[in-house]
Image (cartoon, rainbow, N blue to C red; front, side):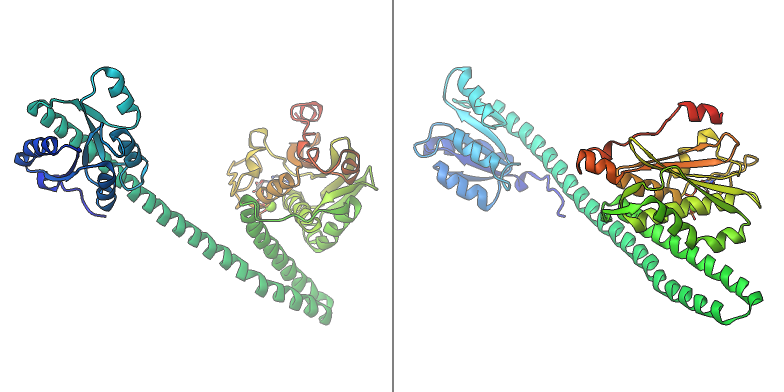
Length: 407
Ligand SMILES: Nc1ncnc2c1ncn2[C@@H]1O[C@H](COP(=O)(O)OP(=O)(O)OP(=O)(O)O)[C@@H](O)[C@H]1O
Ligand SMILES: [Mg+2]
């Protein structure tokens, strides 16, 4: 970007007047100050010259036979390449209304004929100072825009790179999972346990990768949810089947309590399965050995409520919103909350909200954590149609009975 030249000879002034005598007079005033002066004898020529090379300052007569000064001024100010040129109207018209009209059409200032040399040159200098400042501002803005665009590009590149790295981890892991599965069928009981553990860990890693990819997708609104009918019963049992090995490893028992066994959810089965997986894995890793995790399902007026309750240490009240934040690290010693990477619940909240649902956590009366979510039901859709209602779910009891009960 070129620097601004502040020398007088670098200043380009265009004098526009249909009378030669007037042009000569202004030229005579301006040249001794060192300015470069060009002249035009009508509006048409002036516009042509200004567009070819935008002047710093235009001295514009108002009364001209072809296009009058006001119109020339308007056109200069509305054209991208000449809008930064300063315009001074040189007016013979008496009365302030013509001058107001002139300023209204975009002129920056005016002088009244007969032009007095000292006053005129002082005004020219003042307008040139303003023009240089405007130019500086304009250049700074342009360079900021440019820098911003570069930064955005860099940011996007970085995001794409890390996304594709994460994505590329997926296929080798899928292959590992398949091979471990085959291997576990071919070996004796004693070794099988170890292979199953490896398989469970690989499956967990696979889930994390999907969470990472989907958090980005959900945040950018790229992730398209499938809208299908998902029987709540199927969703819960599908998720539990996949986590049997992990439950065994953690020595926990999972109980299912379906108040509404026939409830149907309207949503994306695979995304919702991963939400439930996340809640269950969290519950397992916070459960005491021999603990019981309870999964519940109940059709409510606002939608289908699915809950996961464990017998762990629970989550302190002041951290109940924080656990859903990205990379939330709960390093609260002595309160049973471990420091963690924390993406599972971020994904879960984004996914549930993308369905138009809500998810929150409270403590069970006995002390463990109870995660609950309300998801749009097929029944609700049948009653109220596809729009509006699912987004309006807010069955979160907030500070009502259940919270009070949990203390
Ligand atoms: N059932 C629970 N009981 C107690 N604390 C929990 C429970 N579930 C989650 N938390 C707390 O919330 C934090 C965030 O959970 P989240 O599932 O987002 O992350 P994470 O389990 O640490 O890692 P990942 O990304 O693998 O899921 C956890 O680190 C933990 O401190
Ligand atoms: Mg987790």
